[in-house]
Length: 312
Image (cartoon, rainbow, N blue to C red; front, side, top):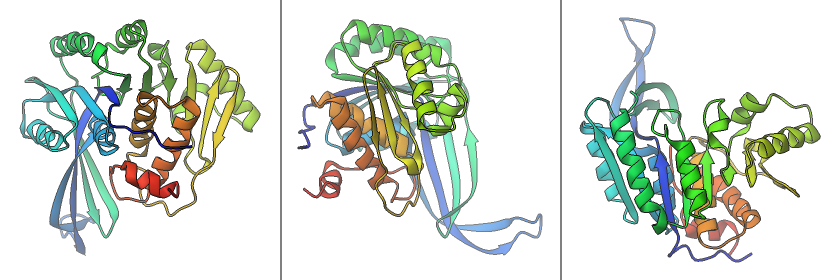
């Protein structure tokens, strides 16, 4: 297959954004206060996380992205806005909510090993979410694909209404789900749970036939066009009404799987927005995931890296 041009693809992303902070350093001693290592920080890195990482992946592929989300009126929120503005191709519409803190995931890392993660988060207010829904209605006609990135942080309270509006407007809706209440995703085009997320909702399985039966049952119940289960080292499986497509994983050294789900759904959205069919979109997304897991932290993939991986 030939990779389509992504230049004119337009994706509307709505979801929970967060700031990924990394403290890199060395551990040379144990604290005299408690039996814990002392990290001497030598470098700090900040990257857009959550739905912001999805937007970053879309921009990295060369497509256009509008991002709707909520942040606190704080330093971390300003940092996120600055990082996203620097991406080009991303129009970041981040609502400031005085009553919350921007979600921050702080990771302490020594010699490529994560020692600790600290999370800061609060739920956004109803008024801000209503304003975001109004902007969603306005932006809908300008996009090719809608991508809803649910991290379970409260930013997608109106997700059922967003799916209804987008489908009524004839736009494909891709959802990266969270939690065990999948009824709220009813009517979406495609859902992309990972293996453990799917198991939490559908229960465990003993073989491929059982997995297929559970996946098709869930797909039919939720009236989805398709269900894609990403399965780590087992690749990914796409379930549609008439077929099951399995893409084996690309054999390579896995460095870090954080953010791989963001890369998968971003690539799927960009492929579909560029006119590709679902099967080709899944094949390319699988390759993109293979490239990104060889990088440290929430990373992105470029169109050139995918072409190189395809041997073109």
